[in-house]
Image 1 (cartoon, helix red, strand yellow):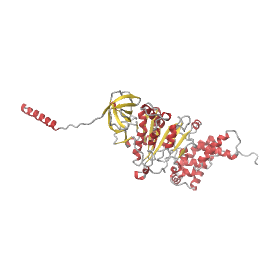
Image 2 (image 1 turned 30 degrees about the horizontal axis):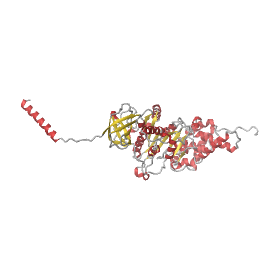
Image 3 (image 1 turned 45 degrees about the vertical axis):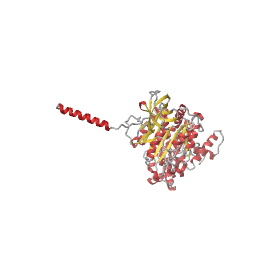
Image 4 (image 1 turned 90 degrees about the vertical axis):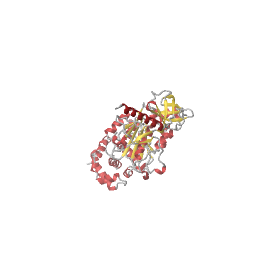
Length: 516
């Protein structure tokens, strides 16, 4: 290139730079920055953010986030959503201008994530198009519809005696290691092919316990329609605190699409303890059992989000199964009584029944469903109407008979029938039963077909009875699942088929030698 042309190009370039510099307008972006005063277990005190609002998300160094929870005149108490090991006093804190939210999308189905939306299953994170705040107001009363459609758990004792409806909140409580999680997992597994999305929220559980639940769901095909939101026992208390709210926002996303959703909180005892820890570190006034005064409110605003929406809002439903752990069978403790008053009934698991091998160890006398028969198939109502009463009478007479008193023939019959009710209500873990299977067994039970079968042959007889379901006419199977009670002809047909199956198991009367 000639030297003259080169000099001319340089001059033009400098001229363009000068023009650009003159025409450029600098836009100042305000940025509110504070600093860390102190760091303690899961809590950070921050100064220098006068515009920060309640529950606003704050950004700390290293990609760490926190929620502004105590807004005082001179400082802010923030709940950390991660480990504080790399955070020091004097570090910079920045406002984000938004509240804590969670990604929601159909791509979450089958995934295991933490309350921040980060994957925990070793798979890559998907690109989510929508995010929802974890704290959302519960639907208004006029936006709700009545609970009328049953949510089948696949467990005879619950579907027959303590029915759960879609949109209901049914508490599962009992001492540790009594099978609370097993009931919830059976309920999830029974939603296969029923167009119900399930969300399992593990709050502060051991990593081995969460891994076992996920393994069971994968083995039985439950992960195809389930989302797992998990926090482990060694996670920060802030993560445990936000976990159920994040899981509920994910569930609400599907409910607002008109889908039916089942969410399990396992368990809210750890959630209450995490909130107590955070409140004490934030110097909030303690109340009963050192819990803060708003411990009732944090659970009520969570569980009130479970509902059945009206048809104008697509008619979706969110059914909640919160789990709570009792100590020494004390269901009148602070947290259990709070949750019993919030929910629409409870399923109480007795350690005594568990030790006797009666699984699921549901104490029918202390369990109740406040929705009741309104959310139960008519086939159950017509067959199991007197079953709970007969079982209660048996339990009272069984206790009385232990004193060694002589019993009349009628009392002995009630006790023998009650023993068979107890055995029929037993069920193995991870083996939910279909509605026709349950109805056939319960109809045979109430019809007295099991009364002449020895106790040791009951399980074998029940297994044989389950195999006759394909032999039932298709019309009868449809009527058992419909909104109409089965007729007398249907009952006679079922009892006749069941009677033929159970006859080989019945005790044959011994021949009387005095008879000629």
